[in-house]
Amino acid sequence: MNGGTKTMHTTATPAPARTTRVPALHVLQRLPVTLLVLLVVFVAVYPVVWIFLSSLKSSVEFSSSPMWALPQALAWDNYARAWTEGHMSRYFLNSVLAVIPSLALVIVLGVMAAFGLEIMRWRLSNVASLVFLIGIMVPIQIVILPLFTVYFKVHLLDTRLALILTYTAFGLPLVVFFLAGYFKTFAREIIEAAIVDGANIYQVFFRIALPMVMNALVTVALVQFFFMWNDLLVSLTFTQDPDMRTIQSGLLAFTGQYGQREWGPTFASIALAVAPTVLVYLLLNQMVMKGMAAGAVKG
Image (tube, rainbow, N blue to C red; front, top):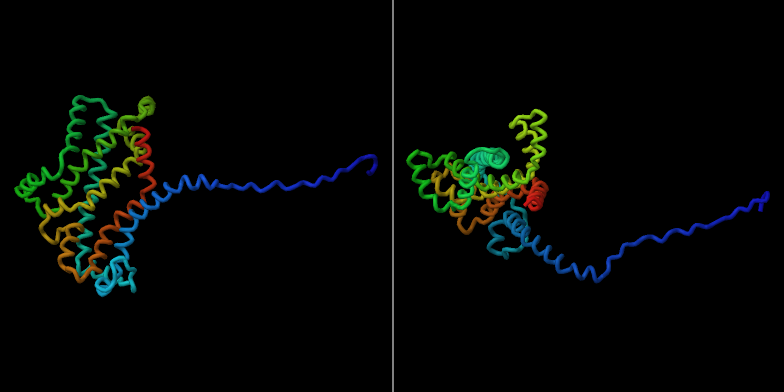
């Protein structure tokens, strides 16, 4: 006590540390789902890893070791042989020159057609939508022979233009149908507000509609890229010249060239063929997930 005042000393007891304990029962309940997810990931990832590891094996390892064994020494020269002796550089370039223009045409024409069919009101728009819908139902195997005859008559065989026209024609209906679903749920109030502010139809398309469907656009572009890059039927039918082969048809000839004794360069060429699709998906997977999620909510 000092001067009539009483001082009280209180000892603050530290609060017990909050611990987050997951009940063991909850872990056991989620265990089957976790194991299933791990199994799916393993099934999806293991083939890619196995191809890459096999591409680094020597010819002796293929004949003396099991197929699932790890490479004893990294034979990077398999990639050099695949790129030069197997002519994968030429096939890779042919695929790029055929796929990139086709993809650009499909995306540009598809988003413009979907916008015109769903946002704009004009006569015969329903008929045009029906034509695109019928295009989805026509399998490519049915028209491959008539197309071959037409391309032969107009001298388009063994040209990249034949591949570009075919990829664009068969990819466009699906892109239009997919993007039309996005534009169908598009808020009309946004467009009306833009028109009231003085925007014309081109400004509405480029400044409002196009940015809002960008995730969906990336999703359909990725799907079309997988189809075009991995195509074998169209490229094998319309390009007989070895100098015009794409990477998939060239891969088929590459296997026949080396037979059973040169599996190292063969797996290296397969890895080179798969690498662009894996790389593109890793770069754009976030936008693809957003586009698919948005489509699921809107649908």
